[in-house]
Length: 157
Image: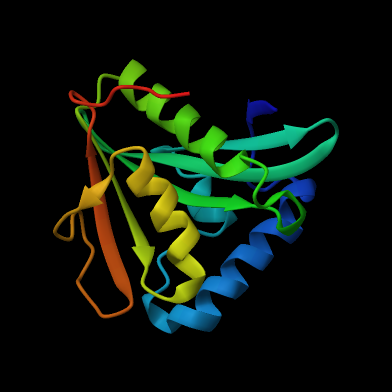
């Protein structure tokens, strides 16, 4: 799998990003915190695409919250790439980049609907643990928050 820093406004990203936003909004309503292409293009966000050959398999992003704290944003595997390891590959890439940047903490916000169970399982499998809301997030029954202490993180294969 090839991970590339990319432009979230690229035409080949549009359909998968639209699917991502639609699906999240359908189960979370106004509590969906996913960024659109404009938000993913912010100076504080780095966006990557994952490719299996010439097929877009997924994307993910890392937002800098401060000098030592990053946030996983908008991870998504394409429907045809689910259960192929694309999510794990993107997450490991984001964690590695966070460590290169010197972050001590990596956090994320995700949903509580059954749709989110596979993602939560992935996050837990690499060491993310529940935490309090961070940055500007507010607690709700539709959101959950997780954090990874990068000083204790040991990469696995």
